[in-house]
Amino acid sequence: FRTVTQPDTRTPADYVLEATVTELYGDFRPGRVPAAVMTIQFTLVDLRGVSTRVRLERTIGRRIGLSRASPETLVRGYGTALGEILTDLARELDRAG
Image (tube, rainbow, N blue to C red; front, side, top):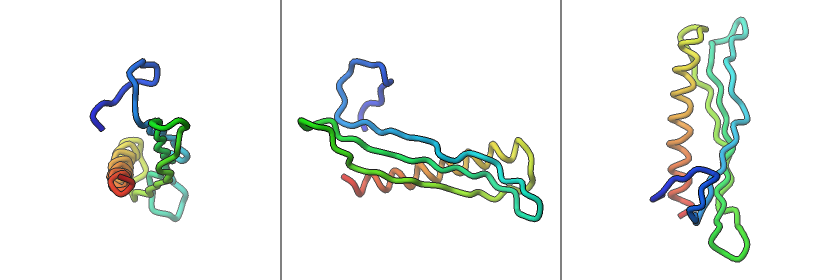
């Protein structure tokens, strides 16, 4: 992508990437390894034609094991999960061409 814009901008765009977080929580249930859980649904919409067309739809999730159940480790786990999810998304976007 050459340019990233805000939703209310008047700059024309060829594509819109929509992202919806469908899961975001810390799993601290007794008897289980604490984990940060994140899932994001992505939709890449092509705006170049007469009508819009969905070029890619993917839901990518991660469950990251944590060393302990604490707010600090949970936030770090979220960061790791997001990094891995975005890496997977970049690969998917490359394939979608």
